[in-house]
Amino acid sequence: MKRIEILKTYKIYIGGQFPRTESGRYYTVKNSEGKGLANICLCSRKDVRNAVVAARKAQGVWAEKSAFNRGQILYRIAEILEGRKVQFVEELILQGQSKKIAQSEVDLSIERLVYYAGWCDKYNQILSTVNPVSSSHFNFSNCEPMGVVGLIADQKSPFLGLISALAPVIAGGNTAVVLASVDYPLCAVTFTEVIHASDVPGGVVNVLTGSLTETASALASHMDVNAFVTSNLGKELNIPLQLSAVTNLKRFYEYSEDWNNSTAQGLHFINDFQEIKTTWHPIEQIGGATSSY
Image 1 (cartoon, rainbow, N blue to C red):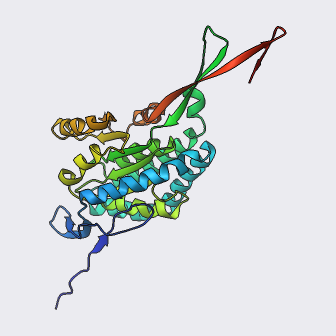
Image 2 (image 1 turned 90 degrees about the vertical axis):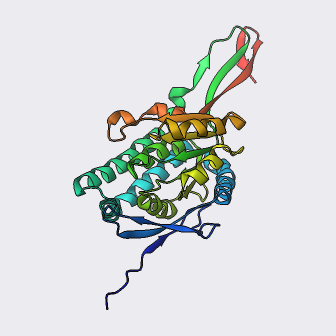
Image 3 (image 1 turned 90 degrees about the horizontal axis):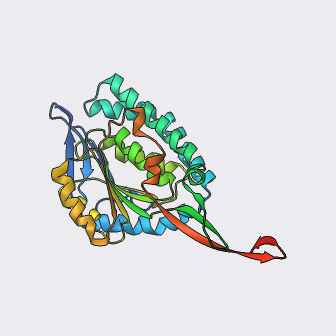
């Protein structure tokens, strides 16, 4: 008698834990030949709310870490991913990519993490300014993370697209709630194991799976999400999400990038999720000399 293969059930990732979806539902991801690859959690609006709560709780802790330490942690993610590269290549091949493309996608993902790790302790110096003013003050403009970012991963670039959008968000001190690719979610969920094994605090990255019809609008309209980003999603899906995001005037970004290009990385991706805060510091004139207090 032919043995029935037991498919792996991929859980979601919320607050540093691997729960099953609150709904108890799942769907089966299949390859191009119709063969089942894995059982994937079908998340609900309640899972979205739980993920946002976890992201908000972790945001202060993550933002307060030194920029150098955040860079070390992103580099540690790249190190672990390098050690598990074969597994990610195999998962991409299972989902229909050629071996050559799969290897290239994983290699670029690792390089992109290293790239943004290097920016962590540098972007603030470049984006910040000392402003000329006509009064007796110093005037500084400084970067601060926006907070919680909702992110819909690129649906056709299941791993590189995810890393390329996520890395600048967390490099800048934000936390993220990620909706993984619906048809190609395996690498996104396996990547949470890499996150969990690194020094990333629980709640900084939260990954949900399932239908975008059920989860995307709930995340876009959530009042405790400060920004929202989509990747190559298309106008038909983006426009309703933009309308949902208006509820608390959150920033909304639509990336239309070929993530394989060198132009699909840069300081501007970090800057998208920074707020510029300005500080006035008075100057006291003492006997012709200038001092601050």
